[in-house]
Image (cartoon, rainbow, N blue to C red; front, side):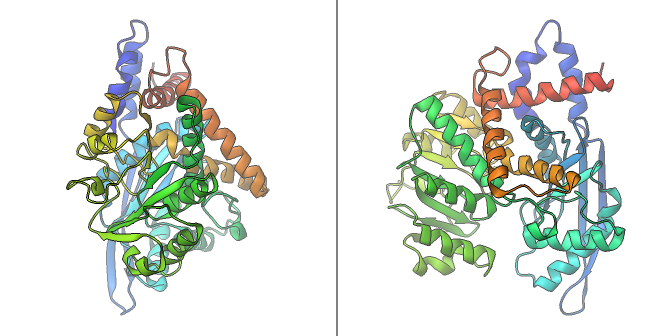
Length: 434
């Protein structure tokens, strides 16, 4: 994450008047203000005491309270959370809302756990974390492995421990517990909104009828698929860690309903629903690896929406996607494209590439709107929040594409430089860097 940012910021570092200031600001930004680590003890269904590690990386409070998701996954460690937290600083800056950057989580794996085990883990996790949270201090949200169920358990324990109610200390809550409309949909919807703008403005086309590949089948993938179907796009893939569902003729609304039920209610793998959908299941593949091995299914994509995890689109995949006719790549997951993959995309400026810090900012943007509603003790309608989300993604697109000599000559460079300059200027105004 740091290297990718540094490459985009080189013109700022070389500026004869402000270059040294920008270099000092960047060095300061690369180190978290605070990293908290703790033990999480919880009991499984057999009565055995289990132990996991928990972290909260409070990276930057320059623009506002630390803001960023909690991730529960076996791969989580302090290093991963630092790179995600660093990226979060600039994503939050692009929204225009007063939010700093942070990230947290645990190496706990919710997969295969009962509701009781997940609840007991969340209660123990929040018991350790709650002392660091507050609506003007640190406001976590969900991420991989932390959905509505986990947010509910975490918030319930926070309320027990603090006797504070209606506080905006977690976002992604349900409507019944002072959450916001559109928050579950926000990352996926926002991803499609900014893609739609870019396709219309840069290619003079629409998403209707375009072959769109989505990776993942979680929250972001589901709602990106829902919005793409509404716009008439042809969705040809979704995936999980075991394989990919491929829809040659495009996914139907009924197919999406089956996938959502499998993932959100049954907590099942995609392989278990092959007979219930119109697509075919291909094991041990991702949407991007389908194009390898001579591409036996003759797979082609117009637009790609990597929405599973970091580093899933590699330097091996990009040339195959380009030769298959890819016209744009929009990142739904955090940093899903490797540095080599990004470098190859830069060699093809005709291909639209919007990085995660801009493309998936809708999620944290609506989290910020949830914080606003909590602070005012109000609940906006679904239509109000959706309208604000559309406006926000439109403003982000305008910022990163502005032809003013500062935002950069690509959308990727624009996203990096605009976010960075906002934070750097705020640091100067606060007297933190001079």
